[in-house]
Length: 427
Ligand code: SF4
Image (cartoon, rainbow, N blue to C red; front, side, top):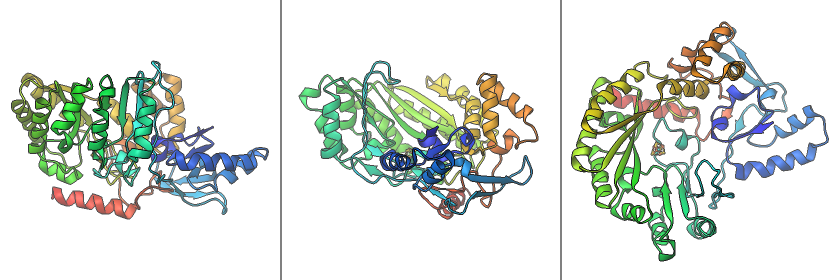
């Protein structure tokens, strides 16, 4: 069995027992090489096939690596290939072309019904220090308007009237304005346009007017927190004034709703930072009365290959979500917290090692509920570290990480430096 995609690329280890082969990075580079290499050994024995595939850059064969531990429930002591001809590190592959992907099938049975998706950008140049979408997939790449976006849009809009512009930071495409002009042509008047979350300072009157014209009534921006100090620490280059201006522009352009995304439990967060988030939300409400205002809020979860990978999930986070809810709802602000418990499970998968494969199998057997995770940990006690170690503990930067043998976009020393810069802001 083989797999790929961002979850497996960031940290394949919890799934190591389930996959023969994992493709790390962009499919544009990997798939062709993988298929060609497989063709060379398709009639060989399985062991020969796996060893051959492991030579392809970015192809990871978990069974060819041995992991040792400081005791059954201790830290990782070493990760090494079992044979000298297998590479000690597997390098994630990065596609550098300017033709990005687009839907190949449009159907009402898709998760996003009848929407034709076009990838406008890949990665994000902002590098917020918790962000997997940026750090895992660097560098920021943009689709060529002439060779990629326009031909794809024309193809897609010949079969549907719904268009989704995809990417972590679509409005930062250098020709985004030209793209809006293209979509504002009369032949696209019936097109319904959807956008992923956008950067605050790109919520211009032109963007909001284009969205309204194309049947979209709301916009989402990720602000993370109302605290300048925390925003500087996470490298979110954004001020409360810009957020307020975005709300004013959204309303002036005719949008009916604005959704902000925030996060609790960011490293170094204090009660004062939380108060600032409440104050910012009230200021936004005041500045754009009548605009439906929502704050979606998640809990910080450490992600592999980011400068915050060593931080654990804050034990106070759940309390903080409740506190925000209590303070915002009376002011007519719709507060939508993401499940804290599922954030804990997300962190477990995010920082897990291959001892988790057994646990995941048990969880599957018990019915995939949150309670099943606790039950499985109890049953496997002594065979792997407790849940708290994976999820809540701050890890030392010297620790051998479950993904230490996977080479991501930036070296560990750079991630450590970025973490130190974040810490310096909080002093
Ligand atoms: S702006 Fe958004 S997508 Fe970009 S790095 Fe920050 S959180 Fe990630």
